[in-house]
Structure formats: C-alpha cells, structure tokens
Image 1 (tube, rainbow, N blue to C red):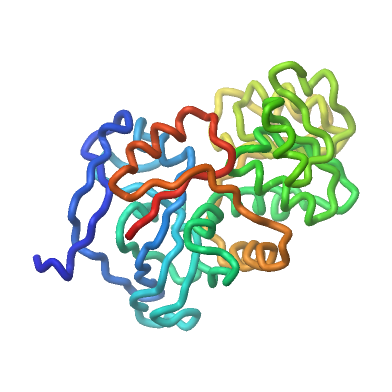
Image 2 (image 1 turned 180 degrees about the horizontal axis):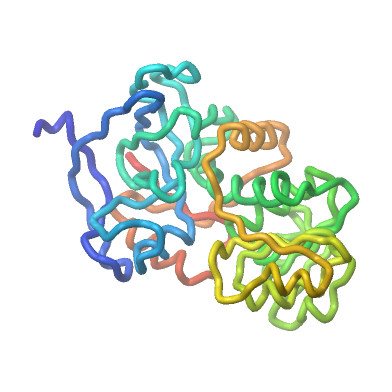
Length: 316
C-alpha cells in the first residue's frame, strides 16, 4: 500500500478507557455513489464517542474509528453528487451510529449529510457544531415544534448539546430555563438563558411549573422528576434513547408526553443551523482542542463532565 493511499486515524482494538485509543495507518477511503471524500480539518468530540469507546452500544466489536462530527474540504466526489465539488469547505454529521470514522485524516460520508461551512467559522468552530446542534434542532424544532412565547426547560444547558439548545430556543422566541452549576450561570445568561437554576441546590420538579417543553440530556430519573414541570399537554424530549423507565407511561399518568430521541444526519437541519450561525444567532463554545495524536487525552477530559461547550480534535 503506497503512502499516498493511506491515512492516519485513531482506532481501538478493544473496548475500554482512553488508553485503548491508538494512532494507526489505514487505507484512505474511496467515495461511492452519492458520497463525498472529506479531507478532515477538525472533528468534534461528543459523549457518545467515549461511551462507544468503553462499552458495546450500537456498534459491532472493534476495531473501529470513532467520531461523527466533521469539518473539512471535499477531496473527491462520488457518482451522482451535485451539491459539492472538490475544494468546497463543508461541515456535517456522519450518519449515526453506523457512519462513524471522523477521527482520521480522511472520511467518506453521504453528500447530503453535509452543508457548506459558514465563512465566519474556522474548521475548529465548525467541527464543534454538527451532532450537538442537530440534536438540539431535531428535539426542539422537529419534535417539539417549539414556538415563540413558550417556556422551555433545558437541562445541562452549559454542555455541548445544551448550549446549542439554548441558542436555538432563543432564536425561536422561547423563554428559556436552564440548569447548570452556579459557576456556569453567567455563561448561561450570556448565551440567552432567562432563568438559570443550580441543579445542585434546586429540585426543578418541586420548583418549576407551566413549562411547555423539557429537553433532558441526563437520565431517566431526572426526566421523571421533570415531568412535573410540564403544563397539561406538554412534552419532554430525552436523549436517553433507551432506558429502564417507561417514560411514556409515566408521562401519560400526568397528562403530558415523553419521547426518546436519537439524532439523525440531516442536510436540511445542517443548512438551517448554518443560517443561524450566519445570522449571529448561534455560536459554538469550544472548551479545548487536541491534535489527532492526543485523542485519548481529549476523551479523558470529556469524561470528567466539567467542560463548558465542546472539545475538538484538530487534524494537520
């Protein structure tokens, strides 16, 4: 295999802690019909990355290359691609869960998983956006249909998904209640939260009422408590795609609804998010960057749960 046909990537041969991640050389992928080959400039990291690294969830057993968030340049197009040409700068989310592979110098994905990168963003900022912002968009816009004047409760509002959810909700004209530790309340106010709540000292299930939409990224126990904040007919959307609690039944008993969301790749959603960026309504917060070789360090920091915004891996 010639050097021109190989690439550096971060792979793992077993499940486990950050130490299982190693740099390897793999064949450079080739785009098929409807696909583009992306020269990766930066790749965002999400909690799903370290979860899949540690335990078997949706993917088969390793070896595999993780990563779903991509920002880079189109290097080659497959048959039938009309949206992009080589040299175009794009960002997007590879199909979840099977389309992983962003922690590498090159990755292949469906052309319609991407949108043109906003000119005002560099690749690091752009790579911080796709999976987390799409998750928030699909929860609040596609699923909940959040409207101007409605009240939304966003848990973990300073986190990767949460800080995008706040900005999207504000762009829609909603009143935003956001939970985070008190140390992050100034950050929440700066991104648009109307009512910050310290989850360490306040039980929202006992204090918050008349909410139209709850967006929860924590766990089923938190979701059950949060159901009590909803007004009749309100909706809770959780990112726990699977869980031990029948949330739908618990919600029905209270005259509300609960749905479990799994993010999907989404060209229209990415275009809408790019428009929010270009209008100034949405900006990513980057908690830190790591070179590709230091992916294990990035995973270790992410797993502490103490970062504000997103971590990003840069690819030279």
